[in-house]
Structure formats: structure tokens, C-alpha cells
Length: 527
Image (cartoon, rainbow, N blue to C red; front, side, top):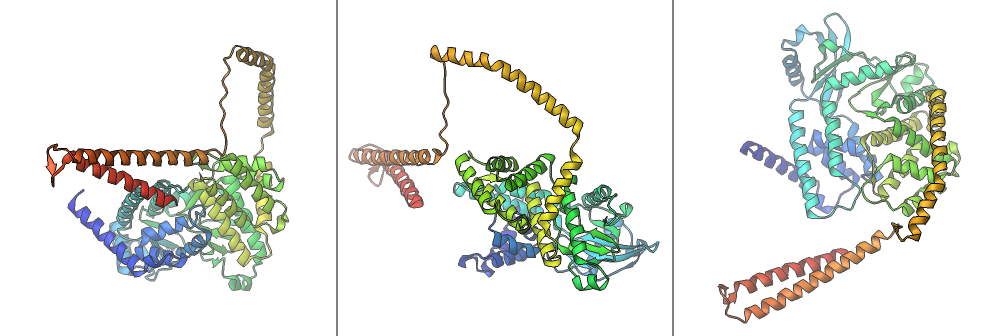
């Protein structure tokens, strides 16, 4: 590694240590302290905190709730710096591009800030400008985070379901998308295309010719923020009607399009005329058809008290990180159904249910991908928005209706009949083969050729403990043998010697000391 890069990394580590010392990390960690530490560490860690807030399967819920506050603004850059970035991108003075450019930022976040401007033709636009050197800073921080994750793996065995490499991959992918405004422009255009038939939904128009990877130019939205209830009601809007429209559209994004806004907090939602306008498309989630089908199966299984189908849906939603204890998983799913299955559907909270499903996955060492983590965060966030600002609308009812309508829309009866015919043919064919297969099994059994593979579910833990006991016994025997052998060698005149003790004896003592230390450490760690 070049010396300059080493110096830069050392300086960054020193800054991180200073922040941790300032926040008195040695006295323990609280949700608020974690948020303050991430804010002090800078944009990379603010963005990582935002990603972590969407992962209740990684952090306790109280930490996720606190990290949501990282969505709020950052200190804006001086206008002179913004001007330099714009002129560098367009390779001309700012006055040649804009008739007027507001010097005060309308909003500022960890990666970029937004200004109001007027084009030469009089069009009012919003200009999103990326902070300088943010890409290089994030790249260095990600390298340090990966080294820290590797060090954690070396120090000890990680028994948790958290895959830090996968989490950092997710973070790096999201950060890369948010730092390339050409990708955000594509997201806006895809969103507008998917919602072209929605009369009450819109997104901002992108000015493609003026958009670069660091500067995004869009039509300015003169709307009322969704959380400004007083202004909306003064303008004659019905909050419950707006809430139902918002909820129905968000469910459509998830269950029909599979392409949804992953950061649906009120600051990204405006009301303009008779339209709900979505803003900030840097973080978008995608759900595959398979994932959407699994979510629907889980909801139906819950309402029908079907623990078997619920368990199958849970396994489909995640990726096991170890051998699944099916008995424990079934018991956890049954407990989930017992808790929520008898609840009045109108009283069911989708956010809380989503959290509990994620915890069931975590407790059974089943990890989830970025699409589902964004889905979970989106559900929790949008339900919270509607509960605060549209209390007369139950999101769970909107969600259930959206799923049922989506099912009716997406069913192709010709395909379904063809699939049933295909499956029926194979079932009949396999049924006709059963007598022959049973005859073969009986013949092999009578000739002593039958083999049975038996797996005792739930036996992993006792076997693991037995294996650990045997290992400790072996360590103890080897340590004692080395100690005894080294003592015998020390009574001889074998050369070479160290401090009048044969070198081979010294090495034996050292090996015995290491083995005994390892044995004592394992006993202490597991006690």
C-alpha cells in the first residue's frame, strides 16, 4: 500500500478513535449515543446508519428507531463551493446555465443538497448537487469497515446471523447508486413510466440534457409537505382521503410493480393540486415475483392459522446461514400465529407484524436480502406516517386490499389451466410408477441392500457440546504429555541448551503452556 494511502488511513482511524473517546464509548452504548457517533464520523457512517435503521434483523428495534433520525438534514455547504462544483461539471460559468440560482439550500443531506434555480428559458427547477470528495471519503471508510469486519472474524467465531460482508455490500451498492445521479434520473423516469396511468400520482420531470453524475436537474415541485397538516387542511384537503390514496399507491408499488420508494418519510412526499408527488429517488427497492408471492403466502397463512404454510413462506423469504432446526422454527411460527392470528384484522399493525417476522428469521439464523429489508423498512415507515397524519385510515386494510386486487389482476387463467394440466399429467404418471417402485424397495430390503439415512433434528447442539468436550480432553492429554516429556528431556544433557535447559525441552514447555492456555480460555469463555 502506498505511503500516502497508509497515512490517510491512519489519520482516518485517529479521527474515529477521537470521536469514540469524545462520546465515551467505554461507558457503554445507547441508541442515542450510537446515532451521535455516526453523525460525528461523517457522511459514510450517516448513510450506514440509515441502512442499519432498515434492518431490525441486525439491530434491536430501539436502535433502529433512533437511527431513523439520521434521515434529517446535514449542515449545508457554502454557496461558493456549490458554484465551483456546478461550473466544473458544465465547464462554463453558472450564469450561462441558470438565469437565477438560489444561494440558500432548500435541503441538505449526507451526500447532496438541493437548491432552487431558474433556467435561461424561465423554467423553475430544483438542482441537486453532490458534496465534494464524498465518493473518495466513502471508498476509504468502506475499506476500513471491511478490515474491521475481517478482524472480527479472526478474533472469534461469529455465531450471529449478521453477515457483515453482505451488509457492507448492500451499503456500498446503495451508496454507489445514490452518488450517481444518472442512476437516480433513471429511477425517476422508471417510476413515472410505471405510474403514467395514475391520475393522482406524479414524480418530478428530469432535465436529462443538464443532468450529470454529480448534478441532477428536475422540475421544481411547488407542493405542500405531507406532514404539514395545518397547511393541507387550510387548502381544503381531507387528510384521510390523502392517506388512503398514499397507502394504496405504496402497496401498488410493492405488490404490482416490485419497484418502490425505499425512503417514504413525509419529507419525500408533497401534495400539489390533486396529485401526490414523490421526491428523492436515490434509494429505491426491488422485490422479485418470488419474494412478493412469499409475502402474500405469509399474510394468507397468518389469517388462516396455517403454521405449515407460514413456515414455508418464512423459509422462502430468507437464506439460512446454518442448518435449520425445523422443530424450533415451527414452534416460533406457531407462537407468531397464536399471537397475531386471533387478533381482529383491523387491529393488526403491519409494522409490528413485519418486525416479528424479521425477528423470527433472525432467531433461526435466516438472513434476508436487501430487497426484503427495504420492504420491511418501507412498510414500517409508511404505516407510521399514516398513523400520525391519517389516523382514520388503517394501513393493514389498505395493504390487504392491495394484495387481493393484485392477485386478481395478475392471474392469467390460461396459464393457470395449462399449469394444472401439466402438473396433473405428471401426478398421474408418477402414481402409475408407485407399484414398481414399492416392489423394488421390497426386493432390495429382502436382499439386504436397503440403506436408510436418518437425521435427528435438534441433535446438533448435544453433538456440538460432546465434540467440544472431546476437544478439551485431547488438549488436556496433549498438554500433560508435553509437560511430562519436556521434564524428562530437561534431566538429560541434550544440546543445544538455553539457560542450561535443553532447547527441545523449552519448546515442549512452551507448547504445553499454549495448549493449557487455550484450554483454560475455552473453559472460561463457555462457563
